[in-house]
Image (tube, rainbow over all chains, first blue to last red; front, side, top):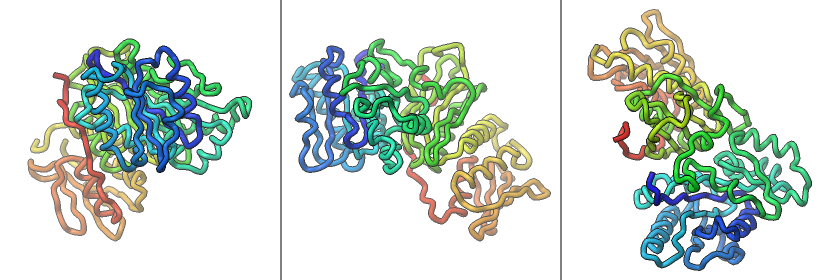
Length: 339
Length: 99
């Protein structure tokens, strides 16, 4: 990963959950002084951008619709535009981009764009997904709105807001968040105020060290024994494998996942011990039916060389994923056809 | 890989029915062939007799070769799940190993 790689963080959360308030606070912090902001509002008249104080030339509002369903191309073009301005010295030389989605946005297609668009690949890297949850209405919203569940499920960080109105978060809400995404720490914003260091440095790429931090990125789900946290719809589990996986088996495995349950594969991330590359593990990352090209680490981040793949799905059984991988590895490593 | 489909393949197919949420049964015939029933279709899964394909999938008497388990799964699902439309798979092109 180049030292000039710019992390793009996605700030999502349901309508009224406090995204803009938090972003406004963050942009006032010195750590965020070199941040470009893209705000996507749903509806004819955007107001969120009026609430954000940011440098005019590093701020873009997308008004043409909801990012997730209409203007993925616009997002890619907007990012290209931002990079061009930066390269030509026509804006603050930002070293971070934050995209605030509309409250109704499905974050998955946005993540897909960030991972796959050839025009921005190489310059940008997904810096993490932060989801705000309103402590007042959060439980009801999660019960009612599938999009809200998805926003929580793909998060690297969850930020609880409006606790000043409720006191400590309701245990039922915390349990629900744990069910949906046990791997994402739940942080608290007080009137939008939160330690910037806790929020956006949550992706694979750590802008502070300009390096990859796989262990933190995979979060606790990747450690210890594989386990599932069940919810009626969304499950998070880790697939572990000690033996190295042939590269072609990994490709077949990802293709089968995408082909058979792409829409239900909310997010997949992992570190994989590739048979042909024992000293350089592959980092994989996928959203729905799109998988990012593997990133190759220079070395293993710890002594643990097992493959760990964290899967966030809607009703895709863990056992099927485990057996699928095992069967494909068995087939690939066995005597070729024509024995 | 030789001989009949392994128990792992049998379990994969059984788990696949669960994952796809389609009704069906799986059993192993005395000669080791896997027999799948569902959606009014009879499916046989067996090792291919020649080198070009690893597997032969027979659906209601019509035989087709399958080069890998991934292809077997695709054929089985197409037979059992009338509403199945394969998601267009997009795997970003990249070297399989680091350069």
